[in-house]
Image (tube, rainbow, N blue to C red; front, side, top):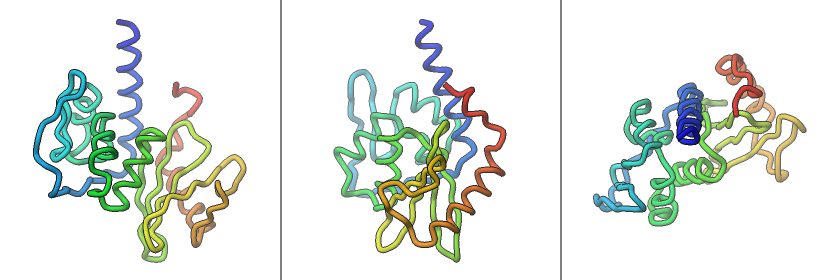
Length: 181
């Protein structure tokens, strides 16, 4: 029972930090059937993006309908395995990143009129930047080594990083990453 309480506490702490971010609303995908499926003891509906698991139910109390932060592992897997081609490129990239790296505090900003998103996982030494060139791409900046991972440098990368630093400092300067387990 203690393990369950610890897991619930970690989930609630994660949600507290996620509240700081941007509410990315997943666009409705019309060609996903409106049907409820069952996996283990949980029922999920990918069309409505709902699930009966505890993680989803906790997130549903906090975040708006179709918010990326509401997704649980059942919905991630359904979207990525059963319906990846039905998602728009940005949504697919955000869903994949959250599934593989963990839920991010997502921010939306503009630079010279172009919209970009960036995600931070607490604690972390890097930030994921989602930027549209020809298609949406993910870039990763390492704050420890002060460089771009995998030698992928986005257009106006230095300006983007300066803007991100200002936003992060104004939004989450009070978070001590060493206290987060």
